Structure formats: structure tokens, C-alpha cells
Image (tube, rainbow, N blue to C red; front, side, top):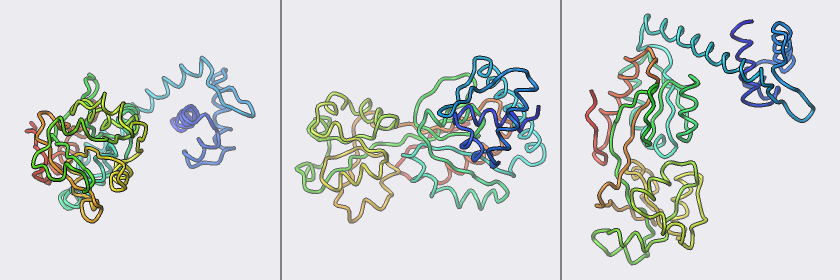
Length: 307
């Protein structure tokens, strides 16, 4: 038994497909299938039940996979410790970010980070919050940028900034001539939301108190998979939406027929934080990333003092 065999087992468990698992592990399917078969023979148990249509995990397989994850996590921790002892500001730092933040924050920090820490390479990925937290616990990423409050003992949260919401609406509506936007104004709008799974959808409803209105709106069943799609719908005249302040730096604010307006409503903002495993050994790399973010934020957001 070796670590590579355990990686093969976990890949099959997560994909439920030997071919997809082989592609993920960069080996041929016969190689992966053969190694797992040898492992099963060595252990004297069946980990996967194979049919022509599916791959299912056996009860003993579930227990073995649970232990395999722990072993691989510890192996990764050993590698990270060795890296930290050599140079904590070298190597790869794997950062995940939610899709409503990454396209607007990353362009602000990538070049400054590269200039300040040339030996530290960022590997970026975009996923919704639940997926990021799962990948973080599975040691697939080192830290995640999220906008959701979490309270878990194994994760450390560093609050970075509060990001206000802005209203994005078509030019040709009555609200265009108003100097300030009230809660009553929002109640009168057809507010478009992101699809379920995006934390921004719930934040818009919770913070701006639009949950009932959203359910009754003419366009209540029109949900977008991305913020870019949502803005395209606004540009086409299907309604209005709320966007995070950093998103107002996008190209959609010019020539799209969309007006971006700040809100003066209390608590109409979201808090963006960086979360990472408490056991992560390269604290200096995390701090370098945090420092770069805090040094390059625009004045449209409110920085949180970090320790």
C-alpha cells in the first residue's frame, strides 16, 4: 500500500467512475483499476462494487476511504511543514474564491503580489462557498475567500473588508431621477437574483429585506448562474439587481445602459474574509496574501483592521 494507491481510491470514490478517476490522476484506466484491484486483494476486502452501469462504495470501503483521506491529509501536512522550514514565501499557495468576488478582486492584487513575493506562486480557483469549504477541509486548497460567516473550530477566519451593495438598474426607469434610494424604492423593483448556491442571492434578500418581494416578482423565477449573466439581464431590461461594490469596476458600467447607484441603507453590505485550516503550517504565506489584499483595496470598500 502506498499514498498513490490511496489517491486512486479517493478519486474513484469522488467520481464514481474509473475512467474519470484515471483522467484526474493522469494515469491510464487499466493502471488505476489494476492498482485498486491489487490493494483490495492485499486487504482482503472489496472497496468498490463494479457493474457495467455504476461504481458503488461498499460499507467497508466507506471506512477505508475515510482513513485514506486522513492519511493523505497528514502526508500533505508533512510536505507543507518541509516547505515552510525551507522558505514559507516560496512554492505554491492555493487560493479559492467565490465567483462574485474573484473576477473583481484578483486583478487588483495579482501583479502586486507577484512583485512583492516573486517566489510564491498563486494557484487560483472559483467555486461556490460550500464547495470551497469542502475543498479546504480536504486539503485541495490552502485558503478561501468567502463572504459567509462560519464558526468552526478547525478553521481560522481573517476578516478583510466590508463590501457595500450597489443597485444596478436600467437607465429608463423612474428611479433614475431620484437622488437617494430607499427601502421602499427597492420594494417596487423587479429584483433579479443569482441561482441557489450563491451566497450573494441570500445576502441580497437578507440584508436588503427583499425575500418576500423576490418571491412575488414577475421575474422571481429568473435566476442567473453568474453575476455577468445577471447584469446582461439588467441591460436587456428584465429588471434590476444588487451588486457588490468591487463589481462596479467592471466594463458593464459603461455603454451597457446600466446605472450603478450606491445604497445608503443600514447593513447593506457583506463581509469578505479569508479562511484557512488552523493546522496550515505556512502562516507567513497567508499573511503575505492578506497584506497584499489590504494594501490594494479601493475606497469603495471598508477595510477591517487585522491583527
